[in-house]
Amino acid sequence: MDETHDDVLALFDGLRVADVRDGMDWVGLPHRGSVSRDITPVAPGMRLCGRAFTVRTRPSDKVVPHGISPEEYTAWAHEYWYGEVNTSKAWRDGLRPGDVVVIEGADLGVGEVGSNNSLGWHVLGAVGVVTSGGVRDVDEVTAQGIPVFARHRSQSMTQGRIEFAEAGQPVALGDVVVRPGDVVVADGDGVIVVPVERAEEVARYGRQELENDKAIRRGYYQSLGWALDETVK
Ligand SMILES: O=C([O-])CC(=O)C(=O)O
Ligand SMILES: [Mg+2]
Image 1: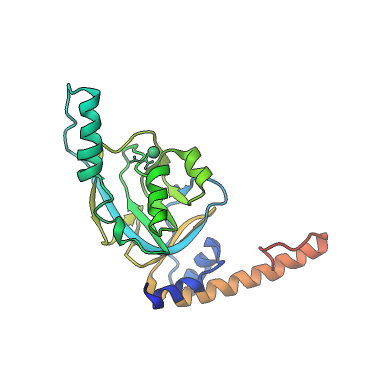
Image 2: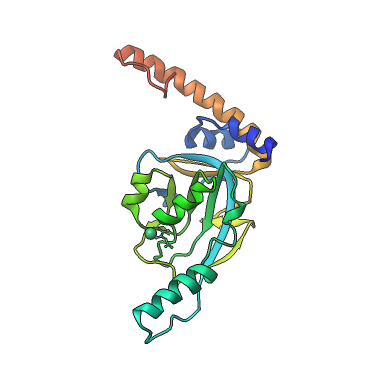
């Protein structure tokens, strides 16, 4: 594991997306980082912080065979499509603990992330997934709790629609560029990407704003006689 990088990630511990946004503003990056607001958590309460592991997919022009039996279709879909064309076999062994799988998707109504692949990537160390494409199996993704942020919910598998293009290169999440190793933070406010070389100072001023906010809200809690919770301690 890259120790320097993990030290940087530790600086973001507990920071909300709003704090990271503030930190970006404080260090002169007001127009950078905030990912399109239509990329949202699958379920309320999902949050993640990690380093970007980038994957790009692309619309496929490969032809789906016609007139084949369902058994032949099974072999084609499982062995050819998921084995060779749209496969995470090409990159998933490169995942390390603390990675966020960031997928540049296509607006094709495809559920390229689901309960199966997101859980498999988590087994290999990923803390969650952010895609500019779609998610399916939303109820199971919710129950499993591995954070997934996506642009839309879509029923379809990828075959005949989307194929793997490359991993480990800069990708687009909407109009935000994400490079491998950039810091990705996501919660109910959406997703923000921090250029890794600015991460330390962004976290410093993000934490300043979080502590400021906590102190004010703690006072309100006390006036209301509310028990203090983690958000104000
Ligand atoms: O099969 C897919 O591409 C997505 C999916 O449903 C899963 O991983 O569970
Ligand atoms: Mg599935």
